[in-house]
Each structure stands twice: as C-alpha cells, then as structure tokens.
Image (cartoon, rainbow, N blue to C red; front, side):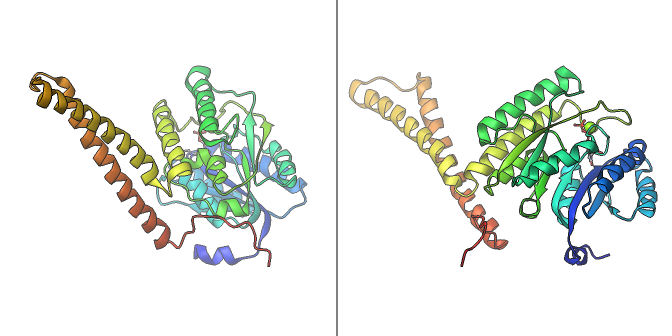
Amino acid sequence: MNPDIRQENEEVDLSVVVPVYNEVESLKPLYHRLQEVLDKMDQSYEVLLVDDGSIDGSLEKMKSIHVENNRFKIIQFRRNFGQTAAIAAGFRFARGKVVVTIDADLQNDPQDIPSILEKMEEGYDVVSGWRKNRHDQFLTRTLPSMCANWLISQLTGVHLHDYGCTLKAYTRDVVKNIDLYGEMHRYIPALASWLGVSVAEVPVTHHSRKYGRSKYGLCRLVRVLLDIIALKFLLSYSTRPIQVFGLVGLVSTGLGFLISLYLAVQRLFFDRPLADRPLLLLGVLLIFVGLQFISMGLLGEMTVRTYHEAQNKPIYFVKRIID
Ligand code: UDP
Ligand code: MG
C-alpha cells in the first residue's frame, strides 16, 4: 500500500508504536498483554509493529499476529535502521489522536498504558514513563542513565527522571511535528519542548529482560553524551549559530590579539626578542582559531536558512489562531 494514502484514512483514538528488532520470543506474550489492556479501554486503537530488519523470524510472528487481529499492523523495514528510525516511521504512519511508544521486549508493561493515558487527559502533550524501580545492571546501565537524565534536565529545562524509558505518550501534534535523527528518540520530550509543549511524568513498572538480549552495549555512553551536546545546540542555537560560534570566535580572536599586541609592544619599544617566547604561538593560534569559529558561524547561518527555506519550515510553532 502506498504509505501516504494510509495517512488520509480515518483517525483512531490511540496508536501504539512498537519498535521490534529480533524479539521473536516476546512478540506473542506482548501481543496478548497489549490486546488485553487495549480491548478493556473502550477506545479505537491500532498497534504499529515496526519491524526494524529483524532476522530471527520476528516478521513471521508479526504476520500471524496481524492475521489474528488486524488492528495490529506491520511496518516492515528493508534493513535494520535503528530504534529511532522505527519510532519515526511509527509516528509518520500513526493515525491516533494520541500515540504511545513501548518496547517490544516486555521490559515496559502494557498495564501502565491506562495510567499514562489518564495523565494525558489532564491536558499534557507528552507523558513520560519513569522506571522508578529499574531492573537493569546498576553500574553499566542505571548509573550512567541517572547522570544523563540529570544532565539533559539541566541543559534543556525539561526535568524528567527517566528520559530513556520508551513507554511514553504524545499528542498527534507532537509526533507529526518532530523530526528524529541519529538516536534522538531518547530525547523526544526535550526536543518537543521547543514546540512549547507541557510534559508530565508517571511512574511505571519495569521488568528485567526475559527473552533475547539488549541491542545496546557500553559504547552507548559515548553516543549519548555526543547526542546531548547536539541536543543542546539544536534547542538553543539552531536558528542562530553565529551567536554561539561567533561568541567563541570573538573571545578567542580578542585574546589572541591582546597577546600579540603585548608581545609587539615589548618587541618594538623594549627590545625583547620574540624568538624564544611560546606565548607568540598561543596568540597566533587563538587568532586563527577565532577567525575559523566566526566563519563557521557564518556558514551555519547559511545552512539554517537553507534548512528552513528549502522545507518551508517556520522557525516558530503556532498553537492556534483565534480569528
Ligand atoms: N530496537 C529496534 N532497533 C534497534 C535496536 C532496538 O527496533 O536497532 C528495539 C528493540 O527491539 C526493543 C527496543 O528497541 O523493542 C529497545 O531495545 P533494547 O531493549 O535492546 O534497549 P534497552 O532496553 O536495553 O535500553
Ligand atoms: Mg529493553
């Protein structure tokens, strides 16, 4: 089916997006638990199982689930594109007024969906699950995650205890207006803060992984750190790069200029030779680095304009127009 035709189909109350990468054993139990919870809720729903290039027979399992209950739909990727891509695809094809994301490995509990939706009804745009009692290895998973959560909260002003929990709910407005790249699925509430949304948190249960294994190793730590830098930049300066790069550039050039001036005065008026002074190197370096930063800012300004104008993407987000 042409995916874009699907978007025009009628709306449902709730879309559940599940990224699936080699989770063959947990799919059936997940299906039963999801179905049980969703059927009880008296809302029209769809479940989008996004097969992220699984090679363990997950797709066949999903097909049999779809045959049993056609509200469970499958989006099949051609290869493994990563969890962020899977979630982005779910967002794109979701028809729900509210969209919930949940892991396929049953570490999140479908039983928590109703309480999350209840919170949404209070008027929030994003409700995030908080794995208060986390069942992952402390040193390699929970502790780094605590540090990352603290850092992201400080930098973005969106204070959440648990960014990493996939179980979250979003309004349609949020999912249709957010662009995900890299591994940014972890930071959707922070990214959405740019849209001016209200965010709430609800404690959820967390189980240890029963089937299969985690798709992430320790090198996630470095990637998360780099992503946080990108996130801060995108949120604060993406529409005015010259203000960041330019500032650094000006400070550096200024400092370099002062150092060089000081050395020049000493050389010209007090006859101090320049050859044995390492400070000269620093001065020259600072001037060059500074000029480079300023040009980087200018290039950034051009890129921003291309980015927004090429896609007709405004630099603001309208909630409604009262006419
Ligand atoms: N996942 C995915 N594509 C990937 C890696 C993971 O769709 O490339 C899915 C995976 O199947 C699971 C969810 O993303 O449903 C979270 O992955 P995982 O449980 O390995 O992460 P962890 O809980 O260890 O942080
Ligand atoms: Mg998991």
